[in-house]
Amino acid sequence: MSNPSLLILPGDGIGPEVMAEVRKIITWMGDKRDLTFDVSEDLVGGCAYDKHGVPLHDDTMAHAQEVDAVLLGAVGGPKYDDLDFSVKPERGLLRLRKEMDLFSNLRPAQCFDALADFSSLKKDVVAGLDIVIVRELTSGVYFGEPRGIFKEGNERVGVNTQRYTESEIARVARSAFELARKRNNKVCSMEKANVMESGQLWRDVVTEIHAAEYSDVELSHMYADAGAMQLCRWPKQFDVIVTDNLFGDMLSDMAAMLTGSLGMLPSASLGVPMDNGRPKALYEPVHGSAPDIAGQGKANPIACILSFAMALRYSFDRGDEAERIEQAVETVLADGLRTADLLGEEGVTPVSTSEMGDAIVAALDASL
Ligand code: NAD
Image (cartoon, rainbow, N blue to C red; front, side):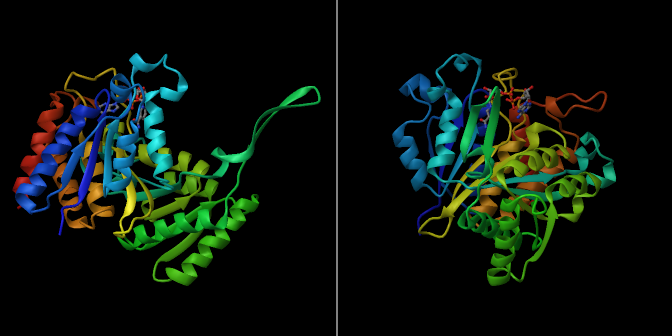
């Protein structure tokens, strides 16, 4: 059987720096766990614009459609701020998401014990937290028509339309139920069925899909505003939360920050299954290209490393090795290693990007 394939797109700014550390983990998996990937690497964002005049070359796009998973670093930077909107670095990322039809955006909120003090919430509320928000990514109010700013009599009217089809709701619901089966088998669906028809349809379709295909998974429903309150009050009551594009945008940012630093947050965007049964998938850290620290060895590589762990779990069914990586991260943090973004305690000297990567590889070695 051929090796699973992985396209790496390091991108701009700190993207290549954090990706170099992921490469160490990928090599380790091949050497020590007999888990070898066919890795290819290409350009996205500003660096692709520099070479090709576009932020994503057609060949790169075509290759992304063929591989088992894409792993992206970050795109953008001040050098490209004045470019026309159509060729800005971010357009490369948006093209990948759109053409791969990545409708299911997974944003975990996972709190490592050693960093529980970083949260704005009390330590016992967040310590050990491990939940995932599944946000519908390709429809809803960000895309619905009509949209625009119109003139009505003497004043302007801003219009956006919340619109969901049954099939759009059904596919993201399935994605959440499948995810829950790989975790703690619990899904909470959030909408505003009390005041929005699209929310009523959302609740109906999620309920129908659950009854027909996923009755082994525990399902609950919550209004999104109450859900936001519960996320702050006691986030550990949740396992998987599934919600629409707009509510998911806000709830996932809120949940993510329960856990501390931007340099720690991975994400996955999944599409429909390919012929081999794996979903189309793009894994990337939540953070951007951090031009303020690029090239200084200060970037925290953990978000990108945890994004690779998500790839192992959700694209390659290797939850065991994903857990090994997460445990290695927990170990180095518990040992007191901190990149500059994680400094809080007095008297701690930060480690560099590559020192953090090396320490995680050493912790992986020690796990054998
Ligand atoms: P950013 O996430 O790049 O940085 C915000 C702050 O967090 C900065 O102070 C940065 O130093 C810090 N930070 C981010 N990641 C870090 C890490 N791994 N380790 C340590 N510190 C880290 O957001 P920004 O400054 O708003 O945007 C900078 C550029 O990145 C812009 O061009 C923006 O368009 C782009 N961007 C890209 C993505 C993406 O590629 N997915 C996401 C957001 C922003």
